[in-house]
Length: 295
Ligand SMILES: NC(=O)c1ccc[n+]([C@@H]2O[C@H](COP(=O)([O-])OP(=O)(O)OC[C@H]3O[C@@H](n4cnc5c(N)ncnc54)[C@H](OP(=O)(O)O)[C@@H]3O)[C@@H](O)[C@H]2O)c1
Image (spheres, rainbow, N blue to C red):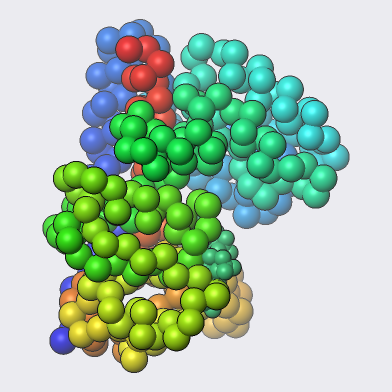
């Protein structure tokens, strides 16, 4: 079998277009746009690029994006002060503090200082708890929300199916397991959450009708680990040195793409799969936050 592509770029454009229309309606109704504040601490090059790309997407969609930059020498109390002032601003509906932060700043403490209703990254424990109990006002972390949308919009049935997720992180694997195993439409899957202590991993992954890899181990998932006809979603991003590339590196996923795509029925590419969905779901979460705060 040769797998068909689940095209995250295409699906992300659908989500972005819906969000753009929703933002226009919101702005016409209220006379102000949904607002998203970015906080960056220091000049980590990847963070500069990520925040820049997200701010540019806000512009494209009509969201009022505002970037706040603190010096790398900033201490935790300064970040918390800034978060507190953004929490208090009514036109700031979403707050994103870019990770990683400089050493000495406890990221958990910063994320928990964001008002849960403005936590568009979905990292606050209250939002993870709301997701666990199926509360529709939960903000779901953008990458798992993006994987869910790829499956739903790609027409992949979930109800009753066996899903194996490789990786149990708080920002990807765990929320994704909660989303897919939730009760109701677009969920109802039977989910196994595997990790580095899982024994005989290939026998677990071969059970999967839907296999989702979120480990950060490039080309870890080989064809012998995949059941014939499985749907394979690759969240992993690893930068591999490559002198043939202008940037000196290429991006690889957790899945050994070519051999696995001979066995799978559907597969996401890297890049162009889950990656573009993450930013699209951030925009969608910001519109949701603005609507909930003005309801
Ligand atoms: N596309 C996107 O927009 C996007 C967004 C976020 C993350 N990512 C990518 O997704 C990947 C995962 O990110 P993350 O933040 O979730 O990573 P993480 O916090 O490092 O978690 C990795 C998970 O993989 C598990 N794992 C590691 N090695 C394993 C092995 N040999 N066998 C089984 N499980 C193993 C770990 O198990 P333990 O818990 O036992 O240590 C852990 O649960 C990374 O490549 C990251 O760059 C992509």
